[in-house]
Picture 1 (tube, rainbow, N blue to C red):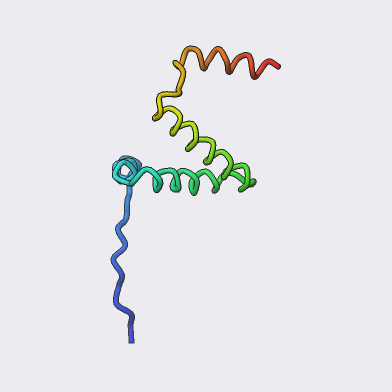
Picture 2: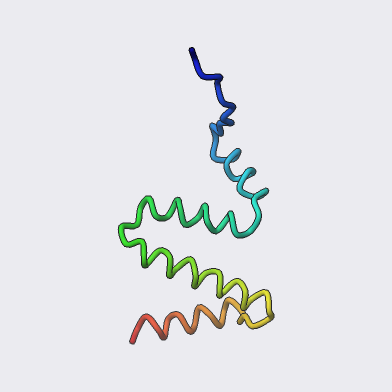
Length: 82
């Protein structure tokens, strides 16, 4: 006896995926980002740490603890030249 077909929506274009991603709750968007990134990243621990750092940074910005982009770029240059 055949199993009934399950409905599996498909997304054929990047735009459809972007539109669906925009509708996800924030945590699920980060989980999706992690999933996609992990397909190209061999070190899962590094990926998990980056995800945690990203969430922490977003929370800090939401709490008004961010800095202007121009200032962040200046700081980044000093970090990368040490």
